[in-house]
Length: 259
Length: 307
Image 1 (spheres, rainbow over the protein chains, first blue to last red):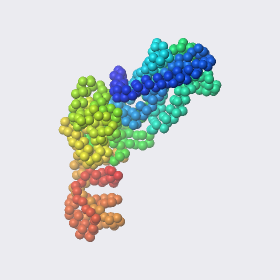
Image 2: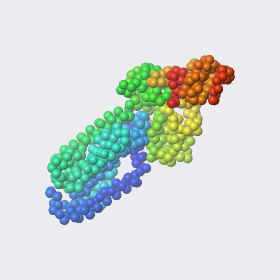
Image 3: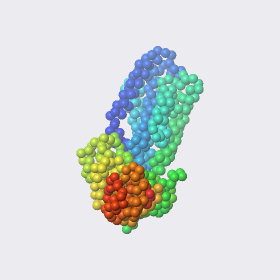
Image 4: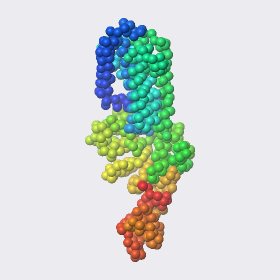
């Protein structure tokens, strides 16, 4: 029964989180509010005077933006959970090494890490949804319905990121991933404008990013807008990314911690 | 009594490099057992295998009579581990570090609370219990790490280089704590490259060099078997040590010429010094002392422990 050990790791993460929750909750509350107000309402007031995107005619920009921004924020949080937190456990504080020396062991450490990540992703998504609903950008029902999508994209980003971080010795490569991977994905995966606005070759790049799938899924849920692909394909793609990330993490953690 | 740890032909390889090379030893309950050797001798690799963290390459290892490959979790639940680099959660308080670790051992919350009281007392961290760990001194962090290793009342405590990096005063405080544990009957395995630490703490030890065990015994027994009762250390001005070598060899049973000084092994260092003077040698300084484990190591390996 491998459950208790996994939950011990989650409990430890929760104890650590208790120390930092104020700052963390504040930023996961304020950041979406700022973005929704500046981009959605401010910039949106200009956008709404235009023709509207193909397929989104008559929709306010903030209503178009909010679902995508929710999952894009979860994607960013997932990337942070899978990088700097892992770097601290592996290398800076070496806390993973002491977990592995206890009965918990490597497998349950990995399990606990991802359960905690899921909880955090759910938290940031629910907070974002609440802010968006309060600003009238989204209906309260849609806000709740989007939380699982936020969790899924968070995990689908965090898991490969964790595997990537597992055998890093410094943050150089991580910085590069954020600069050349996470930030472009944030900007060009359909969050701020439909990818049909992109040049054709970039459109096909955008469709393989996990965020595009999450954005499509989120808009389908919040706006009832039908996407190019069936929903199960979006979900399946994100689940697959997560699963591959977990398997790789398991292998790489064990290679580093059990030598 | 069944030994707590038993190893035969124990080997650890990393690729082509053999870190631990067919060593054998056993540790009895209640004993403080040491691995003494320079950095890179294979001590930490051995500890990690005993700790059921690092898989054995070949040979036989039993901890509490269990095989680490099959029963790693059961072994780890009965061990206390004090790693060289502390690996504490620096963002958390002293108490929280102990609490989290106790939970890893599935100890009920109420029981951990009581245990934390005892351990904070033992580690002399009462005034810092709610402080974050990050700003604590090296000695305090190490005491906390030892306290953390005791949270589950382990049957065996593994200490990897427990005083490396600490100032002399902090070392003595730590030795006192470890001695207390020994009196309470806690079995300990200690790795160290400090011969004074090994002499102070260990009932029995093995000397390791390049992955192999070169000698085994009690500190006193090893010194008696491999060195003389006394040692005369003489220093000469630059360039005069080498030429003095042949003359020095006449006054002692054995002479080691090091870079900066000569060690003369003899049963009576005072008379050896008088003899040195009689031969017309004028050392810059001379020190008479008892043999230590450092001398044993030098004799067995031809090298010094700390370079």
